[in-house]
Length: 380
Image (cartoon, one colour):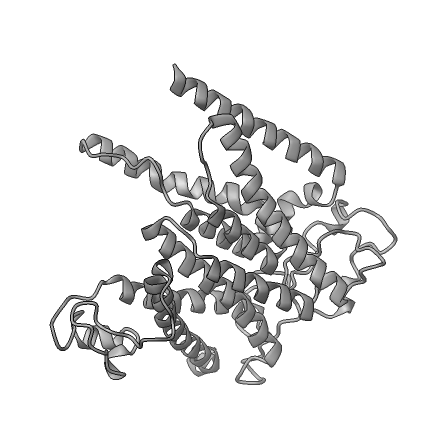
């Protein structure tokens, strides 16, 4: 296949990258101002050294930073390199999201590009068809790009200031609820794609359903089989998906905080971490978000433990409190992108009320016992 057949897809990825750079520039404003409760609108971007306004060309993402060599044009005060990395990282994250969710669902593309998620309603016929994705593809991508942007901003703020501003999580939760209600599951898929799912009241834990639940704007409906009072594709189902996802995310964060504090006798997770899970739950639904915290904890340990060992070997002080927001965000993205595999593993748990209740009690009791042992260890 000739290279020019891929030109429409490449141009779309380039446009998405540029969009991500612009969003990253805005996220830098949030990261720099929200922790200090400053307005994100006024004043315009200024140097923190001489407080002079930064010109429009000097404020262009990446280009402006490289053009000035990371210094103020007037006073030569250095700008933090994090501005550059946030812009570049957001641009690359947008391209990755677009590639996984839109390009891999393309029709008529290379045979090696198999669909990642089971979302047959997304069709980008960039070979032998339209050079641009249809509107529903852009809506789908844009909705999830809002979540991705909020996760990046929250993580960067928590990394430096040990806090997650509610202005980000609450506003993004509202966007998640509106989107889930306006585009209820199985959107963007047609109802005809549900033919493989039982509609006679049988449980969705059956082997014949395994791996066949279409991924919508929220990855799965809040329960299967879907109740008659909230039919498939209705705003009621969409609103319930968003509300239950947000409520479960909040309950997980606050519940684990309460259990560990009860066991250890001191503060554990912050309320901002619970808000972060609430926000992600309103976008993705409760199933994916239920795994985000344990997955995020494992990813965090994989980074923190080697770092702690390095500091101890070098004789340096190890921080007693570490930001967990970046770990939760990493867990959300991992569960979100890895849902084709994770969803298949947990499908038998998430659609059986008795098994689900047993798992919740088992995990809650285990965390309480772990907290008590940690308190006893410190007391001795």
